Length: 291
Image (cartoon, rainbow, N blue to C red; front, side):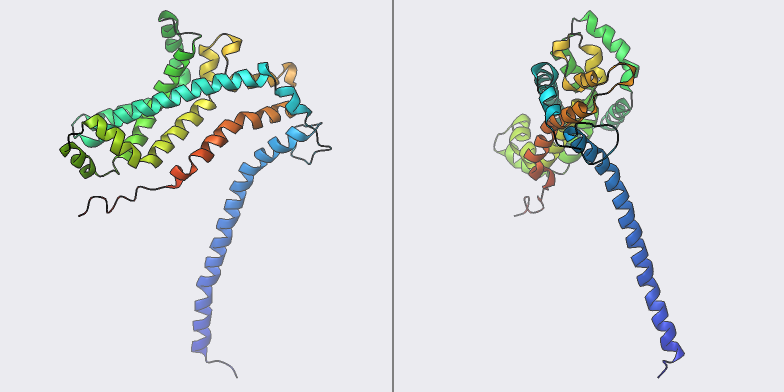
């Protein structure tokens, strides 16, 4: 028995939004798969080429499995000393950046002033300055103050370059901590520094973790700054020593480069794993000031 026309039109109109919704979902899934493939292909090349005795630029299954590439790069001159230099430079710069950003963000977050907004806009403008544009005067300054070819000079420059954006991040996270908690501590006789260290920073653990990861990753992969400020080969970090795998006349040791890249990425991956819980956490302080 045929349905009346009114029921047929209603069923057709109800099916159209479903088909459109399905098409949009499929298009979104296809876009996400394309983005995932763009990230997965370089990672697949690194893993496969590190085990391929005849590695090249193609992403392909290894013709045979070998660990010779790792044996070639796991030496003191190629890997261990540069990695230690990177840990010293990036770890020192990250620690100094987090401390300075917290001390700078605290008054910006807790005290109102007409200079807060101009100061924040100024440091935001500072993040847009390219490193290559300021490296020449920085190099001349470091030569004059005897900081060239020193670890402390590279750490100070790393800190200065990462500090503007770190202050912005730290200030935004610090705004989420209720001020009433600090006022209760001030009533008990705590100073502003004590309330910052014992109340604000522990409560904004996810924010501190984000600033730490951001600062460490940005300094860990920096090639240009240590290449310009450090002159002695024994003081070069791993981000500079990776250039040794690129030979003259376009010759590249792809297998050793892939093996070194895996070893070079290990500290960053370990940092993510160690603070993954803090990165996924939230403040959840909604009921902390009630009662």
